[in-house]
Length: 427
Image (tube, rainbow, N blue to C red; front, side, top):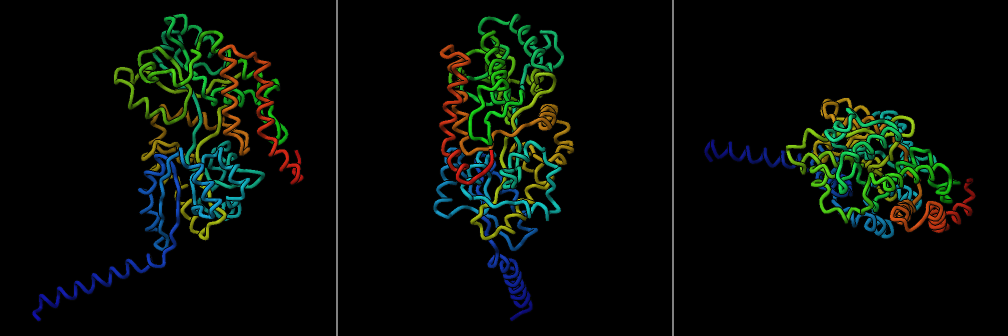
């Protein structure tokens, strides 16, 4: 054998040895199963190589699940004792999975963590993860609602900025309406959406539910005040009484100036940037929700990362949550998805501070309020817009609507009252 053959054999041997070294940890590796929905589930895999390099004994298997199938799939997995180690959960789902006993409490892990400090998270968002005094999720991204508006239309009405109070806001919309045609409106609030009405209720301080989530609180003065304010948009002709399915193309209507304002979440920054014509790109912006007496409240929403009680790898799962919660990782996630980070430290980066439309969300996140933490929330939210829509269309009075809402929701919560009574939990 000549020298070149010996060298080639030596290199091959070395390569095999290196390959064996590289693969050996994988053979003993813990495999974490992470379920995530939508766009987040598509792209989170791109963050895994860096985590796996830090933790060569851990591999992460990401499963992307469509939002439409996610809830049923998670419930089926729980019943079949086949839950993942970690899952992304919408924070309105969290109470339901806590009630089932599906999630592991995280308080001891948080207390021992150097990487997760609850004080660095927006308070209203953090509280959506606390059920009966225990923490079951770590916020992954945040979502709230605020006002998108045509700044040129507002300027023609004599306003350089969106007013911060309800009274000022309504005055501005009346002025805008006076300059519009009969088929143009200052505001679009689709009647089959609940966040607008619920957001107004959070601003008035309505608990929406009473006695520890046992009964509806819709006939109480604070919800009534919010409901009257909501209806005033339609009564005064400031918003058309239409559902989202009756609007052929929201972006065209906004672009043409037929709609001057729309209340929605952070994903619309990208949607408006991508779908509106270049000619109006410098004519729209965002503003925090106006309130009764100043800057207003809005709902705390978003998604969290939770560890399932059935996981055999809770320690490793927690390491992954700590990694995904780092400000630097959150900024990478923001670049991939446009999802807003839940940690205040992340918002100090120029990536966000230089984004004028995102800054309004940073302001609003200081005034977000959790929704009622009951498993029945999705059903309750549907009842709110369905009953509200009847009032908007004149099919029910305010008194009839609020009484019907209490009746509907009290029936939904009957089983909850029974279970709470058996457990002896105080009201």
